[in-house]
Image: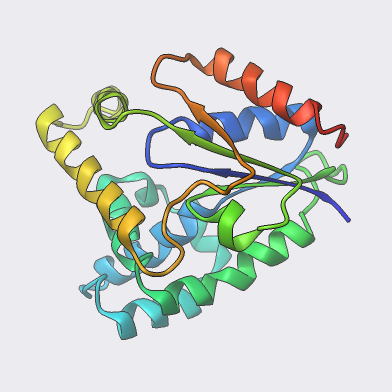
Length: 219
């Protein structure tokens, strides 16, 4: 059985950066599960559909091709908002659940062709629903204001027009959808390390996560 590390948390908390560093450090295969929902949401909106329409969203999730996860448009804010909407639909989550669990159970080989030591998945409900038996669980969070500032600066660096107040409003709306949905809401698993990165840089967050994982003697 391969080692499974679950990382959950709201948008722009730093879980993606942390997952990438842990992926490299422990030689794991990584799945950004948010991309599955972004791809589903983007498939719907780019086709002129409503991401809150259960039938349309479920059909998009069932027809999702892994190749679509490499679409650069998935990094757009429009894709992020669509993802938050389709992810609230139980049928969409059910359609994508097997994909995630299969990845965790059978992590693909690394880019260099070496076998992976395990899998690391980051998302919203990995430790609570997708992989409740994960060997190590982390819940990465930060204040909405800090996360909005990070996203605002990220958008500016990408040359996109952004207004901080609007980014913050969108962040709070997305948090409310993710935490309030009936299907697998965003929540920390009882046995997860809760890591608040509001006053941490990437190195400090990585060090804290390493201490937590190493203490479990998994590798």
